[in-house]
Length: 424
Image 1 (cartoon, helix red, strand yellow):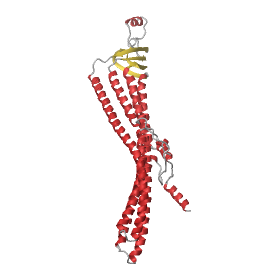
Image 2 (cartoon, one colour):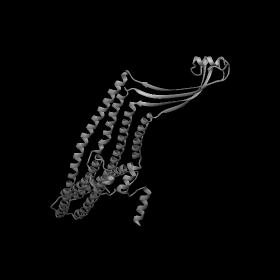
Image 3 (cartoon, helix red, strand yellow):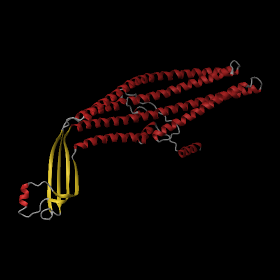
């Protein structure tokens, strides 16, 4: 009956029980991931936009033109006029002219387009890798937050156990106080210790709410308890994946320098135009006149001197050097961080083992302290120190486990490991 009530309440509150794999899958559908996908898609469209420059462009046009003196519908050679006059045919001159036609242009050779295409491709690759890196970071956020939540749950259980232990000793001491075998201040000391535990447990409850909110913010799932998981595979540390977006950003800047130089090269293009030209009244006969006119042009333009082109080259070089220095700085930092995290990971394993042994020792010492308190060989302060010592030892075990998972998650991000393949 109680289980049914709990399930109904959980459903009413929107709480879920999920696996770590389901949390990672939910991350893919959230706005935080979709935004990164859109940015990668936008960068990919940037490549297409540059490549569009290789294709011809065409436009249609139409115009109605009126001049203050007769104007030719198209250029007219003298030989054509000499034939029109004896034949009394309309001249291709008029004050009002209507034109319709089409224009098309096509690049034959524009060197900058090749460099700009390579630059855009490198930027698109950088954006794609950055999207993957951000996804791995959010996976690490989920795993680290869940590990923190598990730590807080274990810490709360340890606190509740200590509280129950002190409350039991409180009842035993209460009997002694009532019978006059112990001073009343002994109860105050234990009551104060219980109160401090209540305050600490309330702080833990606040932190659990914050961790739960953090997981929900990136997965859209509101959990009622931390998700259990175990490691099924070691981190593959072949290369520092976190550097790849920057490496491709540097490539893009290098191609940007090349594109700035390429702007100094000649440009070869082809243009085609055709028009149909009409007038309802020519200047000679007053009749309708119609002429077709078209041409194609193979044009070469070559820059001789433009100061801003050389400034653009220098700016591109400085921009490239800034990106290279940023890469070098990040590489140095990530190498040091990866080394420290790898060393810490093995040390945390040792910390867990040592802390577990300390817990067993503390449990034995606490049992001795309880007997000593009952026998009057220990004061209340001495007994309570042993309670606190056991709680501290248990806290260190759970904290070391939490930090081990968080360290592993950080390494997974640096080396580009999908945590879904590492834990289950």
